[in-house]
Figure (cartoon, rainbow, N blue to C red):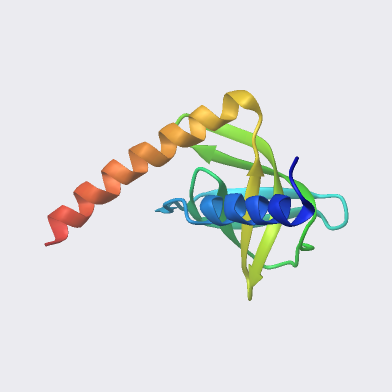
Length: 124
């Protein structure tokens, strides 16, 4: 049986692993539906398999679970996320992914990795 300390350490390790998934530049409009703030509009900065960063002009509460709506190359996406970070106007959201959505996000990240690697190779 796991102690509270072991459980906390395992949880932190998992969060750290998710936090360091590769991020890929992706700019698109995003709408955040917040229970406390209503509808917020912004622009994404980057995406990973575990979350997305966006620039917002109105403050979103840290820790709140919100609904994100944005468009991936495969089409529109709506999913839940937790507001995890704030640095000035830049917010980090951790996905709460429904089963079918994780593959779509994984595929998008894989495609962005290839595109951005090819583009970086053309610049050198």
